[in-house]
Length: 295
Image (cartoon, rainbow, N blue to C red):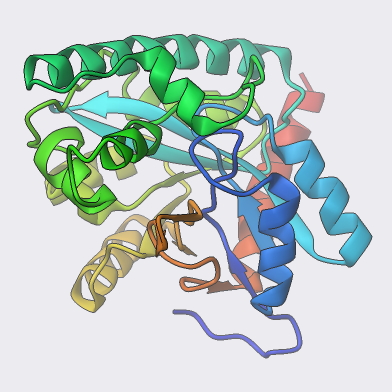
């Protein structure tokens, strides 16, 4: 990972809150980032910016920078591809409308997952998944596969979240569903039109570097080379791809919180990048916002 003087510190640029499938409130993520010694943390919930305002306010109160973000769900070559957006205008009406459309697709995906799990002999419903979350969801929050996995564990159908994903919910699993979503290039465009910077999330999970390069050519600003599920070899390979295409390199823990004593994917701050990367993402976003203002 890029090193910079410790006077400016580091940032974890990929975390989730209860606004999507994380376990902590946005404020909780910010306080945890401070406890981890970070200078900044990004809030990047799936297809929603619902948690950003709370996180930004908490960051102001404790002196920690919060990068407003989102993780947009897309699809390519039969699998889910995620694109991170940073320094987006979280009040942009067009972006909010587009994210709402994606959450509707996510709901249909979840329903299809439940149907497949039922055919596997598991007795559960989407209402039970939501009830198991333990609180009333806001209209702009989203339900994800970890919520379904948590109920599978609770019912004793699987022994762990890892088993739920490897055997049923993840790519190649018996109940995996690849919903008809927008392509990565469209997500990049949406992020740019909302005045943000676009970064490909966890490319190592796709096992398709030719696809990664194709997405890089579609206007990406960066690649998340350092991720909880990347090996050192993966990180080096994606750093090289980023360099070849003139892209920024970022890092993120993909923190979702703790379920049944296990942190999913990894502890907040376990993957971090120097603040110069945050500055570069901010500068790219600022240039796009300036362009929007000049229209």
